Image (cartoon, rainbow, N blue to C red; front, side, top):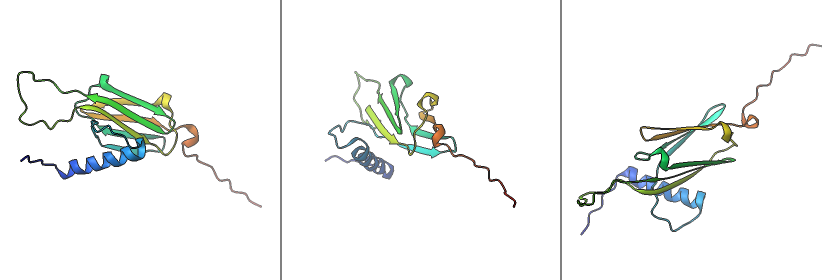
Length: 142
């Protein structure tokens, strides 16, 4: 008999990953993908997207911006142990892909990304028409 332990965080991530795949990507039979969490924060002039991607090298990461859709794809590679056998193998490996929809268009030419300590940070500036506009009110005296 096998014993399989999962943390509440792991269960939540699997459910979130499945729901996101159904709504963002449609239903597929690709069950070999790694799930990862993201945060999306709106600032006045940009969106900031952070994703936890521990173990991902920058050369194995691909980010695509099309209108209001951000696609993050990549591959987590695990070191091989040819002369050893695993006692525990819980670190995820394989392909991953996540599609994130943003409420407004962003300026892809001005977007920037950095990967530090396993945290991907994307800065996605809003297009001019998506930024808040200040309108000065004039007082009219009669």
